[in-house]
Image (cartoon, rainbow, N blue to C red; front, side, top):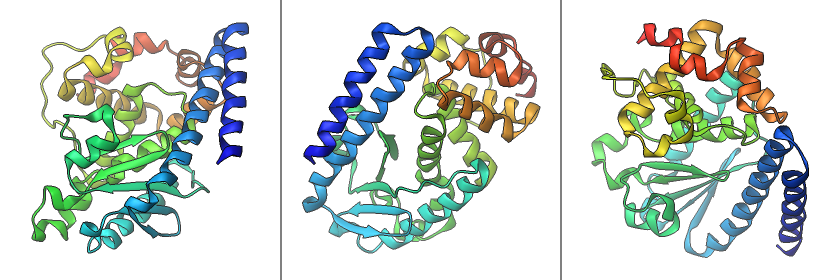
Length: 279
């Protein structure tokens, strides 16, 4: 653990140097390195919880759960492994390091460990390389629990998609895009469409959706993100998304990466783009 903390400190110092002495790309790289260091720290901290959780390990996941979820952990693990295969095909990326997953008995347990979502009735959360999900037993009856409905309507595919997108972009990604991409995976894989039939009174501007995503109405902001992503994929294919994520991982700003891949200004595309005609 001491070695991990020392490495973390070195990375943070280097990130600060880049922040103060470099231009836009240096600033972006500094943020990426700082974020990477925080992920290392989160993984170190996750080891402290071993005594409070049982552990079920699969080929690609380390799942931590309580005694209350002993009877469902294997089924959940199968869905995680299926998501690993699906997203690997979609993004051409198969993480070598096992993904850590925490399963919580109820919302209060999740809030105790994840203060950022306290008071919110979320089913899942991806944060700093680690997936947190609410036990399906907290909101489903026994019949629903073992049905296809949980696999298609639950949080596993969505949260694992965040994990893949995070790694593919090096953490250099805006919130609205990662949410839009995760929602698109649900739509493409399971036919689950967020806020299907939603009618816009007005569209959020690029400024609003890029800089204040969490302050916007959740239903519309997520729906608009999904529509923008779907428009990009229908226009230029899924491969264009992968290329853009690669550009982001190389340290390009979001505006630079988008312009390079799509040949248009990102803000103009959001405000004036043809994606609106597809909704």
